[in-house]
Length: 356
Image (cartoon, rainbow, N blue to C red; front, side):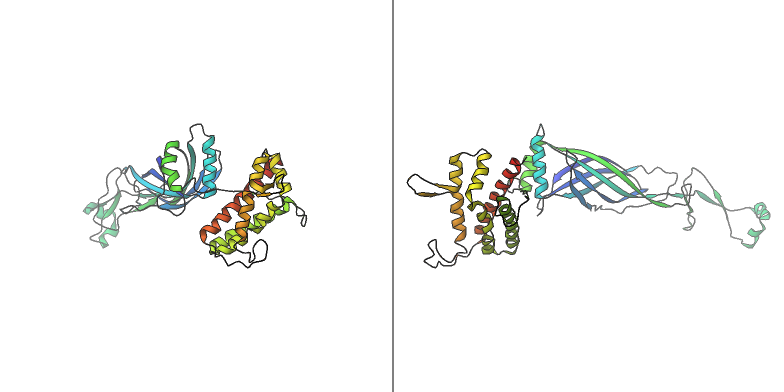
């Protein structure tokens, strides 16, 4: 078996991002049949990013596995399609590598392992000969079988017999009739930048999602340090995600409290941002400030915390008046979830950067 050409395309109308590899294969006609294809997809820096998890083959005709004879059946072209399922983290990784590529191309290597059944069966070219009287005298046994005929080998000539049980088979120089063969193929495919932008990005909804990897810091329990509060915030994000899958929107917002506790102690957060290069004005916009007259000005993060608290606090700010229940909707929960996730991501990344 050999593979001449591989075409790659995004899978349309799939819930999960998937890439299809359509391979033009050539097999020895009637003598080999590919049974299974497995393998993986590797990025340009040799990082495995996906498994080939499914073999699609649906020929509109039967496939024969025959014995070898004097004929040369030649090769038969077959189109085999395999699918690699991606995820958001994988796409984010591909996008990162693509920005480092001089042309913005996506370069993938497909590493295939093909299991093929091979026919080692040989067809003996045998002929039936009607013995004459003299031959019958030499073989007395034939006298007991008046209609018996002799069997003879005839090389390099097509076998033709009207007897269905005269197709004599043997192994190809041994006792093996059929064997399984495993082959490895590696092919590199390049998806041009223009194709990725116009054909793949819209299908995969690239740009409509974000991937976050948080720093899990060491901390002393009970210290109320920024490290401890960050760890509690990361756990809060996980709880929020669990409630999102259940559609419990008010619980999503209520679980965000540790995130707001993370930034409530402003001094250490402000110090972190200053060391990362934030100006005083930028920090004030986030956390607010008190002017020279003693007037307090709310920052955007404080205002969002006050907004989130309305969904689970029964009393107003002065705790003098009972507030009506606010039933959160999906979009409300996602607003607080997205904000919380970005706050945690921002602080986590800055801590990670400054710790190096």
